[in-house]
Image (cartoon, rainbow, N blue to C red):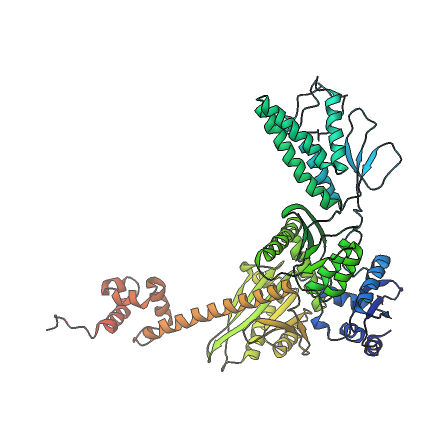
Length: 613
């Protein structure tokens, strides 16, 4: 179907809830969405693309046809959307990676010294399996906590093969392992610790805890205080482990706190699990930055996918932002859990502090796993797609004119390479033979001079830009296109359109087509930074020229002082004040005697020889 046919089909949809299924020319489902009113939601995709995100534009460009399924309610639409996303795994939907699966903890009980590992499924291999748990990273935390609490080995040594072969590792000296690699420790002691670990994994925390408390009290009565302290620490570690395992295993927590951070190249979804007021575990996942414009859409989709496979849910889930489908999603989660699950979006207080903590965790994970080069590469890639460029613009040149009346009309050329200012390539222009202020004629002269120097092979102007930005509207861009055409060059040109606060709100082509940039914060920030830097550089040069002209005007009134002598004096003395304060003899060392006398007389002709009475 053509774009116009898609638009007409969308306009004919009913104002009823349902789901829409976008497909490409190969009949592959590329996006599934839900809507309270199908006509309104689907029609948005086929309106002005300036308001769309880069991913939405890419998705719309691939739509060949779409289907809709009308539902009786928003809740039914939500359930149906979940089912279709799970079935088709559409490319442009936000998807939690499920390649991690829901792992099991495997214990090799048929070995002399059983060891823990993670497994994706239960095998008929004689080992014991516990789980499944909520995620690989969180499950490894359970294993590590077991090893630390029970002082089990975490090294790669094999027992009994490696007993006595090497000195105990650092974990033993730090008190984190009982040192089973030492001769004489014994297999029985290891079996006792493994037995405790098995009971903990079976959820028998009170039973193991009571045993440790009894042993601790007995050690204290026998004045073995160091042993009692060790048992106390082990008891506390097991108590915390119990809370953490309940969460990771999917048992009912008190509160989950959701955090979300949208990065340039990656985004992160975080869930902090609280049991009895204590932070028991953290689950997080990096994903490609989602297509959805609104943060609420992304959070809703992630929450649905995260909790869908879990058998039990917390009584309360704190969300970082408002979501449109809060009511049907609350019903969906409550029916899945068999108990009432509340979705809360706090605005202030202690719960808002928990949201800030979750969001901060999400931001730190994104920053930790995204390099600066990745962010810049993604930014320029998105800018290229937004502007319809064939490749990301490595070198960007920006131009601005500054004038006040007919005097001192100047221009600036600012250069950005890989989204960073390249100050050594900045250039300034003094406009020549201008009858008065004319931004279009000024821009034409500046660009003509710049690309003439480029054609002549001038070292300072040798490199051509991949993208040109002009501080102004469509007429400025048209002037630039004409200059480039006459120079035989083909370089993309856009005007930078400002709002009432003098901030760039959009880019515009020579034909007058505006391209909105405010929906992409990173592009909006980059273009705004370039515009401000270009304006600053032009204004700074303009003020310098004004200052020189004002300083020179005083000397221009002195007979015999022309442009050459004026520059000679200003270069030496730096200011009119210093010239005025100089003696005749000092002036004669800078200029000839006749000129020195005229300057000295000019500044001292009103002085009296004697004191005033």
